[in-house]
Length: 328
Image (cartoon, rainbow, N blue to C red; front, side):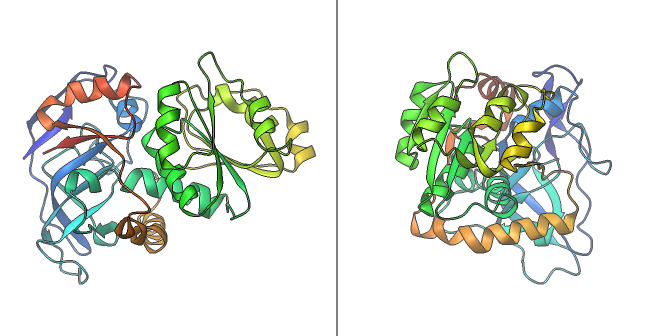
């Protein structure tokens, strides 16, 4: 089969579409999916750079964390899916290939309303956001959510789901145009950050001095101090991304005085059982909203798999608004 292969770790563009060994026949509770579309994520860039290795049982040279395609074959224990079903889902790696084997329970059926390239924009972004914001942080109806990098694929997913629940939203971005586009997805308050992380005054102004209840942070260390100052009493900070660094000074006095909760989260390294649970919770609560049109897949651009280098360049440029997709 053909797959996107990392030739040498450390260089964003040292990848190629090449022939690799076929995936084995699915065993037990596995399915083999003929991949029609795979979503690009910043985690893929980190893996190519050698900074984000997959679990030990995953080929480190074939990236890809989400797929959409057709069930090509099923293991002996699979009962809920059949050959020919249209499915999408998350995986710990190897989605940038013509075929991928995954546990059947981690796959979700694709609505007839969605193409493969639309469907693949859902799993990683929406499951990550739903699990962090609504499950772990416990965001409630009358609370306020601050989303950093709101114009990213994961940021837009969090924004849409919060807006669908009628929750007040604040978003930051380095780009004014992205914030303007986010308003059509339900963004209530926009904060542009062209010169660095200075958002606390704007957040307090938008919340009548109270601060926000939950922060969904896809950026990292550079925003940490302002995050603490922007949170309300009993606020929750969800750390999801580290694009602006891994280390920050921590004023524990602010955390103690406000009784803050600071949590980190990641999907990739979780057990299969945890991934199944996260997928099911999201599917039960949010997939029906794609049927009604209250939620929509956020696709920015679609590239043929052979043009993977151009796709990676585009993702690295920070010009994307939503998901960048590879089509096989």
